[in-house]
Length: 56
Image (cartoon, rainbow, N blue to C red; front, top):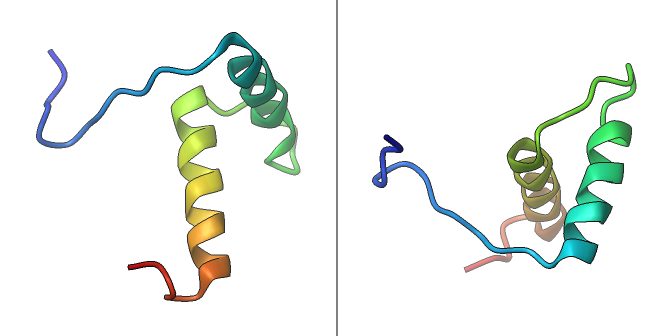
């Protein structure tokens, strides 16, 4: 059973899911495939760094 205090769920269109599959294979330089959730987490953290603390 998933711990609802630590995790959330998202719904994605099939097109977005297909994009995430492609990104999951290309985000790491060694070719390791990430899970979809780790792919989303990685992209979110990268965007947050680019905002440089401007996110509220």
